[in-house]
Image (cartoon, rainbow, N blue to C red):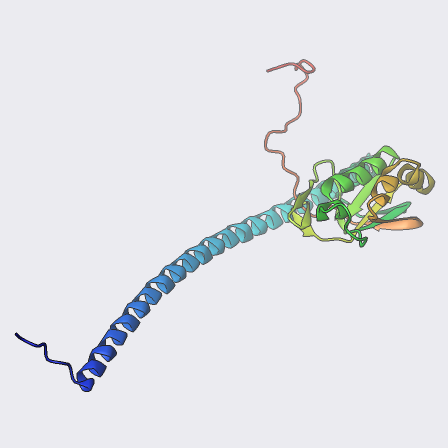
Length: 250
């Protein structure tokens, strides 16, 4: 009967070392593959973000150039109008239209509205109930417009009929720019009428106060609202022909 020969302690140690070394190599290879995959994903995402940033930067530069050209053209029209016989009347009309379009800085009496997120204890279980949303801001702006506001600004941004006010995560987008609370709205018009439009019983201030949203309305004798610094898209807009039917389909 053959009896297997017992391994010497030194041989067992060598076997154990090689076994451990093989295990460590396998773990190392797996880690290298994982890190390579993560690096590749990160590099791809970084490249995508860089391309997006480059596109937005190019678009921004193009809009700046377009705005500069438009302002230069407007100044040429003003100069030409002022040099004619009826220059004063035409110039006054241009200035009035520019003010109405939000293309000039304006000042006058009105109200300042400051809105800040609630600091009250959350009892509803939904944190969103205590934050200012775009719908809240639109309610304030609409009440001011209904109260006769002739010009509006939001955190220094001129509000036009085409200005968007919408939430984008934890911030609000206005004229393509991001703003976080607190929000400051200027409205030029009759101070008393504008103040009453916001603070009347059951009005927008009362509704927001139920959620402890901070709202301060202050009348002012003089507010400065800057002109709109963006561009107004008119890709599909053109003057109607005299022969066109009102409300008709061409």
